[in-house]
Each structure stands twice: as structure tokens, then as C-alpha cells.
Length: 114
Image (cartoon, rainbow, N blue to C red):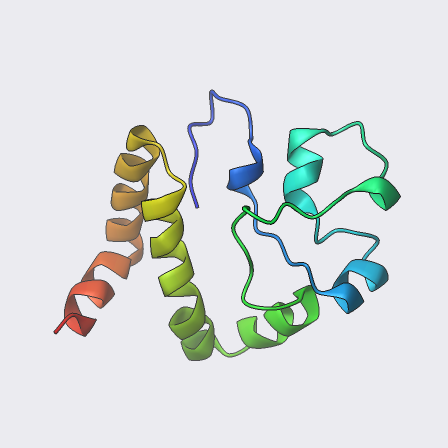
């Protein structure tokens, strides 16, 4: 996920999760996109953004998956590429392509293509 640092953060620039346990235990941290849309809203009033980019599960699941890098990359690479395709502006697609090339994601993607 990338953005032009000269432009404001928008709801599409943050991962969300609508898992209840994560939301309750982390004081609606999972409602990250609403926070970026309306930063003045108190945390307890943050609402889910159904069209925002979604994490692979709740925050707790995501933390556990992140501890196993091959599993993390297996689950998150498709989500990152989907964000590039579905949410990024043309400028962000260019930035994403550069970031993907630097990270090796472009090579990984080409190797997994049929």
C-alpha cells in the first residue's frame, strides 16, 4: 500500500478488520479507515468501512500470521496486488510498481505466474 506523501491519507490507505474480538479488545483500532476519513471521531464511535481494504483476519490473527513470514507473504501478496489494482490511483500504481520491484514482489509474482 502506497500513497503520495504530499497528499492527505484517505480511508483506502489503511487496512481494516471487522472482526468483533479485535475491535472490542483494541478499542476499535480495526476501524482505521474511518479514523483517516474523520480523525476527530472518538474511538468508540468509529464505524466499519465495508469498502476499505481488509486484513487477512482480525488484528490478533494478523499478528500471529506475521510471525511466519512465508505464510504472511502467501496471504498478503494477493491483497497488496489487489490494492494496487482496485484502490490505487494511476500515480500510486506507478509508486507501487517501483516499491514492488524493490521488494522483490515483482520477481515473486512473475515466478508464480503460469
